[in-house]
Image (tube, rainbow, N blue to C red; front, side, top):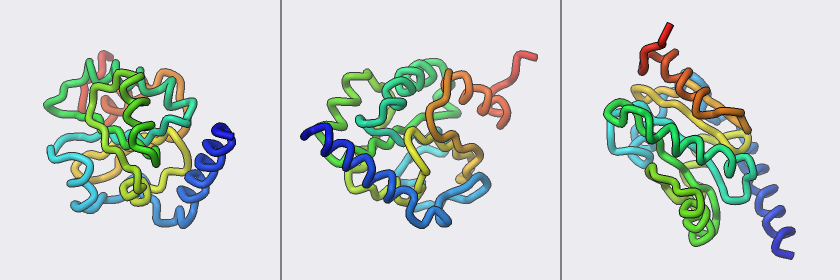
Length: 161
């Protein structure tokens, strides 16, 4: 029964994320200041990661984001996780089990996720100067390396070429 309930919640969230996707942030869109202030108080490049405890790919991807967070220059870039679990205790337990060491916002009311409206989980957005520069949705192998390449492409880190 518990598994069926989780599946039901997952389907509901996925369906709610896809409703009115015409208003979802796309590459090049400016994120309103009131949304940016909810995500981060600092004026840096922000990697926003939407995740949930029921998301299998998130369980694989989040430890790689922890590793990335350990290596990035936090003066220029930060990672902010947005946990979309509806049950706070479940989300916090999940975060602790993975040793997440970057800031996490527990978006139990889906206030922030409804602004971004990703088409699935995990979903990552790179925001620079208030503008969406990159979106990475779904499971990606070596997401830490993919994001580092994205940061280099955006001129945040020098390439080794």
